[in-house]
Image (tube, rainbow, N blue to C red):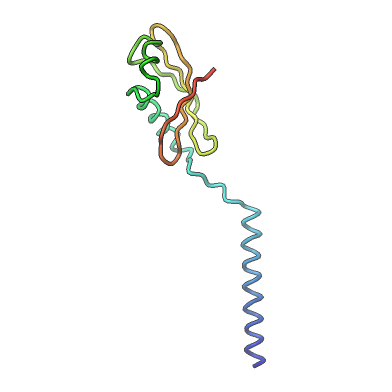
Length: 118
C-alpha cells in the first residue's frame, strides 16, 4: 500500500513539474509563427502583378481610362508583412497618369485587395 501511494505521489509530482516547465517555456518563447512567410514575398508580388494586369482590380474600367492604357508599367516597392497580409506597394504608370497603389495579399488564401496610396 505504501509503495503504491509513493509511486502515485511521485508520478503526480513529475507530471505537475513537466506541465509547469512546458508553460514556463511557452511563455518565455511564445509561438510567433504566422501564415506569412518572408520567402513567399516574391510570390505575393507576382500575385498582385497578375491580378492587377488581368483587370481584377475592383475599379479597373476607371483605372485603365485614368492611366490611358490596358498595360501600365508597374514599379514595385518593398514587400512587407503586416498582420496576416503581405503589403505590396506599387506604382502603375500610363501615358496619361501615374497612380500609387498598395496590394494586400492574404497569406493563406492569396486573395488580393487594393488601397490607393498617397
